[in-house]
Length: 602
Image (tube, rainbow, N blue to C red; front, side):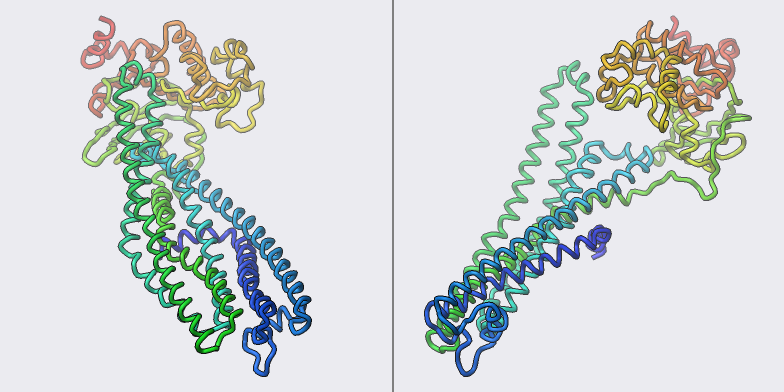
């Protein structure tokens, strides 16, 4: 029930529209049932059954109800031909009003549906943006996209489409049941003999459907993940001639989805024949008992019996739907579970109470016995301890996997250290506001991230309302202005997804221009030139040189030729600091740094 309450809570902000939709549903259900009841005096007038028109010493309950409603507009006891015309006109009026109510209900329901979808997607997306990088390391991108799109859509159909439809059917059921009781209590009880039987067969079926729908959604997420990985790594796929392998993997996923989906459809399809059989049984009982009441007992007129039969057809449609509802809502419930798993993922990195803004580095940055584990029992950093004076350049070098990137990721608080602390001017960075801290860091990495937007928007990313002249000045400082002006639309050129229309060197210079525009007090260069050709590296290095002035800089480098400007070099090996010093000191001392340099320049 807790899950249901959580699902229904999304209707709260839309309760006004939902109430209007409910009123429209009440109007529709009432008019729909009454348009059938009006057939009783019509049939009585056509076939001359005075008992059905309210004529007689003891008018029945249905006669009184019809006299109170239809009788206000049509003289049921007058000329039969005039009465028939009047009743037909009355029925047409009811049909027009009923369909107007149905139109209003559909429009209001759609507004609620889309409002819930918008709110839920915004909430899930907003929460995802708050999660730390460890979450995105655990969850595949395709699964995230699947839950944000397909699962939310499933939840929308549960919260709004099925629930609003259920409400409508319940109201139709209630209105129909009322008029059936007015016509004949005994015949109504006969109509309900088989209803309990349709409710007792769903337990095992629903449990199996729940498992099947969960598997369908999980496999759908895996299909999306595979497509995303293949497209993003298409160069690798083609260079390795791995198309047959990826095709086999994808075919297996789609076959698993096909088999699981069909298995679930077969289970859900059982609802239709089972319900139809019970409906047919109920109809047979109703016809037998109703015919007996007309022919043998005389307690019911022919018009009332025919009207009751029409009413019963309105009754069985809601019963059939509501009996199948447990199977229909299973995909939505599973989608809700998967969506709530994301919403319940804890935000591990957030501002502490009383956190202060980051205002720059005056003394220096201290790593104090920092330890880090991405997985418990598998340490990446093992007591890293060093100091970077303000305004200096420190280079982090060492073998691949030594922990260099982790050191700078912790400074940005992409992760929290398992133990120890990072301090800026003696203040633990966890006591600084997260947005302020990250806003004071400029990061230029090997894997430059550009968005499917204009050059100008990519340079000004994260800087609200940056003036055009500042954007262009930043591009000039990064040696990017000249090539930008050769693009078809200059600064308004859309660079494509991940900047695919630009070369590697051009993308790096856009990233450096972004850092120049932000003017951060702390700069992180993570292998910023390692993937560039000689000419592009020269241009990027010149841009970087301008960027270093007056800042505290961390340079992560495999290519040791790029760290000549470093004031201090920290050599990391196996998560520990192996050596520290200047280039000359480390070369004179020997050890890992000298060995790495000799290997590169041999």
